Length: 335
Ligand SMILES: NC(=O)c1ccc[n+]([C@@H]2O[C@H](COP(=O)([O-])OP(=O)(O)OC[C@H]3O[C@@H](n4cnc5c(N)ncnc54)[C@H](O)[C@@H]3O)[C@@H](O)[C@H]2O)c1
Image (cartoon, rainbow, N blue to C red):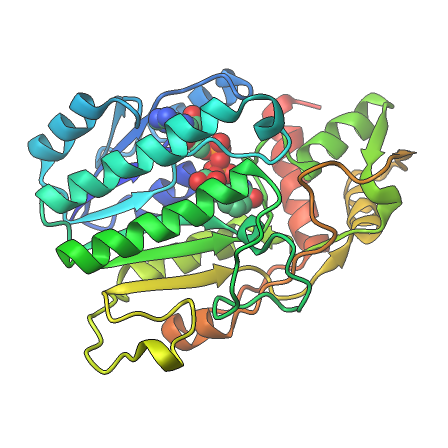
């Protein structure tokens, strides 16, 4: 199969490419290698893929309309895994235009490529942040998500709406995956496990928001990758029986699907800190702070729909995931 992976140098893109390499696909991966976080780490992920002869890297910006059109025209992709985006909630407060460029213009360019080259399945990254102010847990894709609390979340919700319109208009099967706080080896330096690890090893305090009264459905990278790979083969179909009166937000007459991929069990922030401390073998110095604008107090994924569609239930608990992350971190940074 000819596959496009966007965000190849990113945390999840690199892991998906590693997993799919060697399985008879021809993979093209794009990334603009922006400096939102350490570019050396992005380059190192690409270097890690250098031995994969079936993975080709093209440096390209999603927002480059002509470049994206030429990429799709040249390769005739059968399936697309669209992971490139401007991620991060806090960064969206100061850099809103980065989100509209990558997540709205970029997403449109991907949809246009799929439209003009008859892509058989577009799987794209959404986010648990779309649940915004919802307080009924666990968060389910059948719930309405109309109250985002960050621009990042709003762009991810917009991605789902745009995908729905293209599925409806042009018969493109699309599947949106709402990832819940992903962590693990090769992870993102802007995220908690990475920041906490670095600070604890350096003897620096860690910032603990909302005085530790938060919980997250932390999801190990291998569980995310497993979900993505399995969902690639679950192509949504049109549903002529669909009826708007009885519809839930995740259903449609169009070939359109949405799933959560989360571990399915929330972990309190302080238990998470303890798991990181245990994996390092050193105590954290906690700097307790108020809630950050744009943050939500808890996330918790209802994973039943993913299980019914794919048979996959995320497995790795945070204590084990923290140990695996630490092994990678010590090896990568030589500490
Ligand atoms: N990691 C998580 O916890 C998490 C949670 C929910 C959703 N997501 C979503 O999953 C996807 C992958 O996330 P990740 O954690 O791997 O993030 P990441 O930042 O590590 O990877 C994204 C990659 O996309 C690239 N990119 C960004 N803008 C681009 C552009 N305009 N053109 C080309 N490349 C561009 C970046 O350089 C980066 O390498 C994103 O869409 C993100 O919003 C991630």
